[in-house]
Length: 109
Length: 115
Image (cartoon, rainbow over all chains, first blue to last red; front, side, top):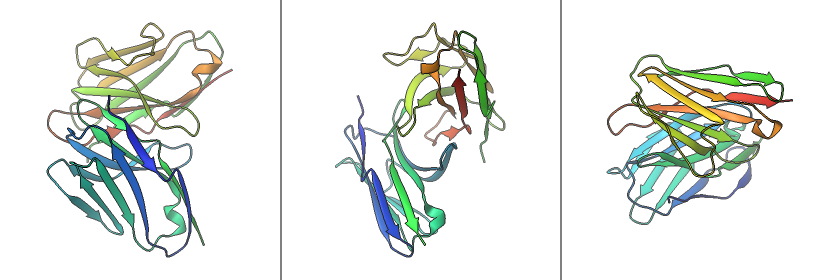
């Protein structure tokens, strides 16, 4: 059974800092990996989708990498802003989609 | 882009009653629908997978007689929580996928509170 782990569980940084969120998974036979953002009490917002054949995806200040062989992905957020405060979830897809527990990010003004 | 509409967004019901949650794919055909549950400060846990026209496949520990899933068409799936109890209070969220190697599209979630 696929296990997805996210480190750290929580992170607090001052505005403007660059930061890295980590995601690891136990079964490398995945179709893709997706990073989501979840605001308190809300649904999921898709940030980046990386297909299994890709190494990274970029969108604005976000960059996600995938190393399928080692079962790892990172989400890099550049020049963090208070509006980035949320829980970030990674999920891996094969026959279904399995989520990590998330990293709760707080960006202080 | 692909949109999944989930209703209701919030529902409060009395213990012992049943609640139905709907998810509709608005601009694509959802061959597969997934239902997740999220307890406070925890991640999303997959409850069941349903394919259009077939019986749902439930994850271990999820009572299929309590959480009834219907996926009668390619654009609509419903989750009915039968005889709800306070411990069923949670955030329920659906996601849909179509054939091909695409990411999933998620509904906006339903906050269920059983009193």
